[in-house]
Amino acid sequence: RRFHFERIGRLFENKVHTTVLEVDLDRMIHNLNYFRSLLTGGERMMAMVKASGYGSGTFEVAHMLQQQGVDFLAVAFADEGVTLREAGITMPVVVLNADADSFETMIDYRLEPEIYSLSSLRSFAEAVRRSGETHLPVHIKLDTGMHRLGFTGEQIEAAIAALKETPEVYVRTVFTHLAGSDEARHDDFTRRQIALFRTWSDRIVGAFPDLRILRHVENSAGIERFPEARFDMVRLGVGLYGIGFDHPERLLPVSTLRSRIVQIKEIPEGDTVGYGRHGVAQGHPLRTATVPIGYADGLDRKLSRGKWSFVVNGRKAPIVGNICMDTCMIDVTGIEAREGDEAVVFGEGASVEEMARVLETIPYEVMTSVSTRVKRIYTKE
Image (tube, rainbow, N blue to C red; front, side, top):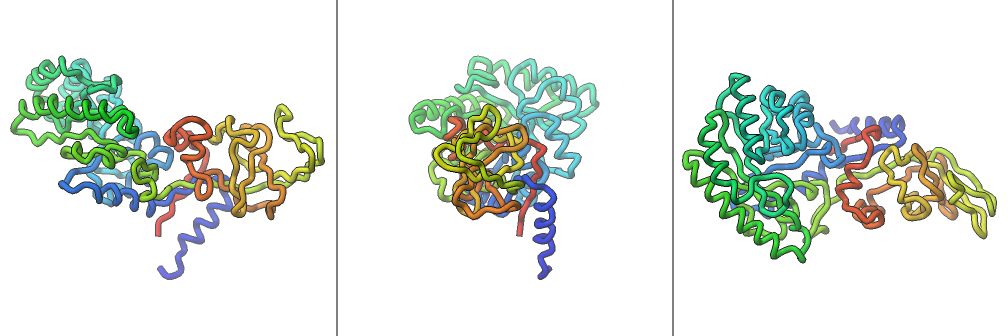
């Protein structure tokens, strides 16, 4: 144990895979515990591992969450849940975009569907009957203002009646999705959503007094910003991966996308670099470094021509010219850089939030855009 062989293993992995996404599971546990510290009433926790754990990886993150005693995992599609089951995850897994074509698979793998309409309820109940199973759990989605999926207020009584006529299933949770809980300008709307949910879910819970139905509303921003609405459970998503709202300083970034310099070139004044010749050694020679990461790896092409900088030996190195499919060039003029040196794409000194601002998008998109061909490496002491 004292020789720390896993560190040697990581060193060799880094040598084999030039471009890697390094995920720090200890930091993720820190973030999990921060949000847990906000729960003062014994609320349960559902953790989002959809989209391959927001780009961080599926099984490794799910396994850590299972070890940490999280109550539920949530995925977007049934095949993500199947992957978790086949990898040995045994805890409850909710499928948020459950469709009729996947219901039989979900039953086989003990995955629990979100039910958002009478037709989805009937389809799942029919699949349960065909399978010979009885009394399987479902999660009822209410549409309080997101207007994506879910029962509306006018449909509550019909949903209750249908559930009472469907002994094949029982309600495990009732929930809704907040549309703007991360922005103060939407706070009145968010409070209206919470009030509607309280009223509508009261009717469902009251209709099934023999069930212990859990209610949940809050996402990561909601956990921080609306303590009055934690109900029985909260859903932790992007906060787990280090993106905060009210207190971002309390969270730690968990992912670092890093590569290595494979070649350094001296570009004479007036010469150009890359496709379209948009990189120009203007007014002085350039020293460029080629790094094997491109838009096929998830490095957005809109970051070309100096819009983004890598970090090389603690210094910012702007992207020169256009990003290529598999490589890009960065300006290391005046930086002590050699072939083989590390280049941080995002991580310490170049955060995901900063990249999202440059791209005029959200951190979720940056994180989930890292291609599956980029090797994931997990660290945990």
